[in-house]
Image (cartoon, rainbow, N blue to C red; front, side):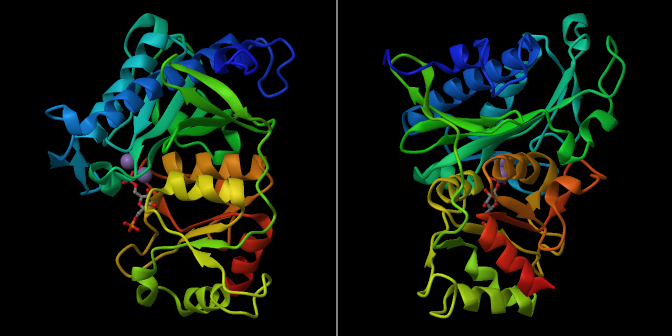
Amino acid sequence: MAQYTTLKNFLASNNNRFLEQNNEDLQNVLNDLAEASISVSKDISRAGLIDGFLGAQGGQNVQGEDQQKLDVIADNAFIDVLEKGGAVCGVASEENENFVSFNNPKSQSGSYVVLFDPLDGSSNIDVNVSIGTIFSIYKRISPLNGPACIEDMLQKGTEQVAAGYTLYGSSTMFVYTSGQGVNGFTLEPSKEEFYLSHPDMKMPVKGRYYAMNEGNINECNPKIIDYIKYCQSRDNDYGSPYSGRYIGSLVADFHRNLIKGGIYIYPCTKNAPEGRLRLLYECNPLAFISEQAGGLSTTGTQRIMDIQPEKLHQRVAFFTGSKNMVEKAMGFLK
Ligand code: AHG
Ligand code: MN
Ligand code: MN
């Protein structure tokens, strides 16, 4: 592994053009997120062998969705590591109705807040299909040495200082941006280290994959139906029908499009009139990554990162992926 740089060294490197230099606090937050991801990755990879890891927790989160045991295990793993780290004064996650302000004095002197989806792709947990973690990091607005406040959490995506995801797939990968490009790291499980495997990732400007839960197609605006017909037509920009690929784990669908080129859409439906995906800890972080890699993320009509959030678990329609493909989809929605 000697030829590969570890995530820790990459973050600490003096000539790292991918992280604000000498920002040890932000390095620590990213390292802590990676550390919690390694622990979650270990739990996921042996989940079928450990009592109490698979299946439903028996409760629902604030959004009325059944919590899986691993949703709660992952949520606790990320909260614990961030609370101990000291650079983060508070967090918000999919699994908690309200944000959490850390009470200890070291955390209250921390400059950052982290918003996250601890496990993305719940329906895939029990069936051994790729799942993920998504995170977003902001500078706090509240004064130092006090509690975090709701305004810290409800910042526009354009204010993100870093964002990323961990994909628990056929290998585990940690992908992040801090506003100077996107880098991907692969976990070497026997060493419990992430190594730089995908430097300076760029999303192809076009591709031939589209990802949508087409079970919902008749629940959508007719303009969406027209766009999907375009994807399936020989008269599209590719000259042949795009291939449909829908995993049902946003992180996995996004990662495929980041590498191969493609578009992911989750529009408003009759059942989810505001969209299904959550702005703060699903769409904004992936929007930041997509733009940093040369792609685009919109609601169909508005840039995701320009939305002023009004509530923690706000949902939005989400179109993300290769620049030319997202622009084409937006043309259908005019
Ligand atoms: P989560 O498991 O964090 O609640 O997120 C699930 C999300 C996302 O991962 C996925 O793309 C989408 O919901 C799947 O929704 P459908 O089952 O409606 O397709
Ligand atoms: Mn999710
Ligand atoms: Mn989740």
